[in-house]
Image 1 (cartoon, rainbow, N blue to C red):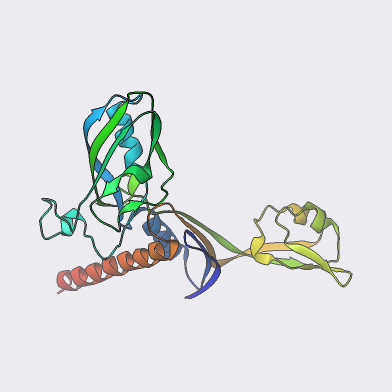
Image 2: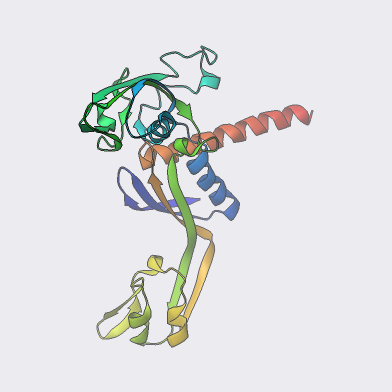
Length: 257
């Protein structure tokens, strides 16, 4: 398999996976989305809340706030040495105390760990009016998206790599193509941005153009919606796939004896 990076930023990465299969591409997509451990608030203990939102609604909003964390510092509760009782290796406490009038934001939460904080400090939690108070202690832990959407690591999808062949010099394809696949150079229309093709087939209707796909090539678009970078999400997904493969190989060898 070969990988070519098309775009790269902290929260987003676009790349081409070549010489692969639909089975592997879909396994990678599902793993990036649902099986990469990320940090999110799981439990909230309210000491005071007389805002306009019920405790349950505030707790739900808190759970959906993406939290940054060092993936090497924490374990899931199932894998922690404390056996799920809760310790500094599998839990982080965040506290907040605000009195209105103001808007309580994610940045107002104080964490017991320096690396765990809101990925976006400006996320609003609730608006507090005059004499309204919000005070709570929340516990964050690692989880995976298959258990709850608040632990979803990324929005990701893929499409087949397009193959575009222009068989005639026709300006009409430039007029109808919404993805700007074609351009005119030296007086001739040519294919300039093949990877932009969205397979809408509008150019096929107006001119002699051949549109097909490479069944072994996939264009991935990965956008992190957690405290991890897009690069970390992809690397963690590959680690998960590798671990599962090793476990399967080990179990199979034992069963096949």
